[in-house]
Image 1: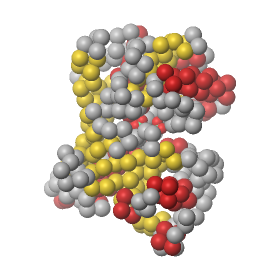
Image 2 (image 1 turned 45 degrees about the horizontal axis):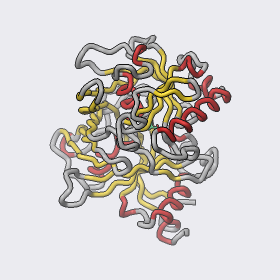
Image 3 (image 1 turned 180 degrees about the vertical axis):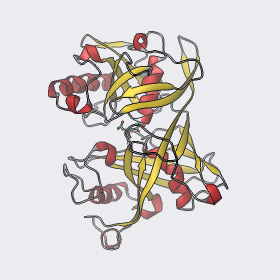
Image 4 (image 1 turned 90 degrees about the vertical axis):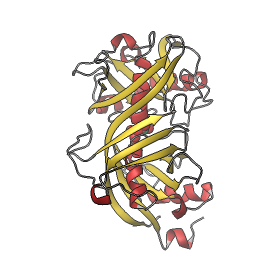
Length: 361
Ligand code: NQM
């Protein structure tokens, strides 16, 4: 399926870091329309399948084997652009659109400005982004002094060295985005193989479980957890059964649900987390994964709610994770019996790494 246009001449591409992820950003018009042809091209661009992605631009981890495809919104739409996220496998030739990515999202608005899809404001620009994978929307706001994107700044993100300009991401309509409802099993807690879990979806399907119930402390380093193959098997068995309960069907080959192990905070945050995406350990925590886990912990009766040290009203929730903390805002309304998510928000940073032409294998 290699064509002269895509192999010989290459494909226009921008590599960006978004939050703690890195990925290749494309305009939809620069990629084949046919999804099979597009996916084949993307696999060759990233260098998948290969544990090192040595012949492509992927970074040999799931958080660096990602693609964002951006298109202008239809004229009558109430957003500016459409953002389709694709998770590419590293070792396996897979391309999945079953989840979105809140980290890569942190670069999407700036990419749209750089490519001329959205005009930049004189100081700041807000871009209304439709999350194609899941439904729901995000407004991304970032600095554009003099009408140009400025990536430099003093905001630090745990898991990223140095600092950069803040990007504020405000989410709406993420409740039940993938599974159809916030509590897809219809219950605030379930028991799977004798282990209490809360299955939830506020933009990302997540299984929340106490670390100790899976035989972990919840404070291990990511490397120690990654070396624990018995734990990975327990996580995989749990999430596979949870996926079925959440209406996701057979999730053995799916990137969702994620599993978040929770423990009492110990570094001044609200909760300590270790997350599996879906079986490998996340070096930090995903954006919508983090928002979703916090949403669970704010619900009376949820697994881990008793460990949650809620911050003062109005203050962000600091999630402890293996490389630091992630601050998220989640507003809940409705009633205890029927909770409703108001809005969720997070601050990230992003950076343009290169802009040019990528030559696929
Ligand atoms: O949860 C990794 C990441 C993600 C996803 C993953 C993300 C999110 O850290 O919104 O950002 O959970 O696969 O980029």
